[in-house]
Length: 253
Image 1 (tube, rainbow, N blue to C red):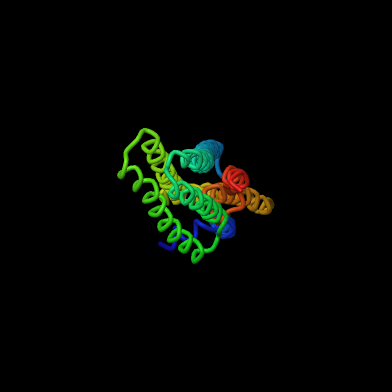
Image 2 (tube, rainbow, N blue to C red; image 1 turned 60 degrees about the vertical axis):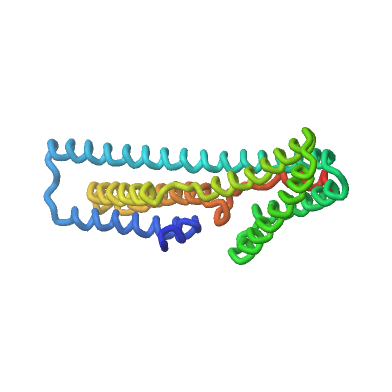
């Protein structure tokens, strides 16, 4: 979907947001031209409606920001869990017979390199190649522990098989966390409330205070940019760094 594609680029969200919100404020200002001055009663009602709309907008932005940060923390936690699972399985490889133990350790080092590349890449073609290599290597890793375990089941080999299962599961959990983003419906609601809020502000601003129309669109657009940046694992500046996997890679070397 085009909307989902746009949400991957926070800077595009910022440009589109500030333009649409400013146009909404200008539209509200145009609608107020030529109207008679509001009576005190109508002014009180308008202030009430405007304040309630802005409050609701603030709550929606805060809720969306909370959703984005929760997903960011989840991605960080799974990166740590993935590094721990790989490191544990590297040690448990000693429970396997040779030459399978050496082969599994070699493949785990390659697997760690692939996982680090998966975290840092921004290119779709490279990501598809990494995913294909990861899937192939996962099959080889499982075969490396399943073969000796099926041939001669022991407690140690069962532990090695369980550890490899954790390695494979941790990658799936990480992928699911990176797919889990703020729903498009929440973005549409934020944009809608932002447009209505700016239109109301523009309607209430006098012609001599037209410069104030840029303040609220800029503040809201910056909020949208921050939320989109946190919620975009590959397109934003705020990203999950594979620091635990980097440390693991150095220790395996």
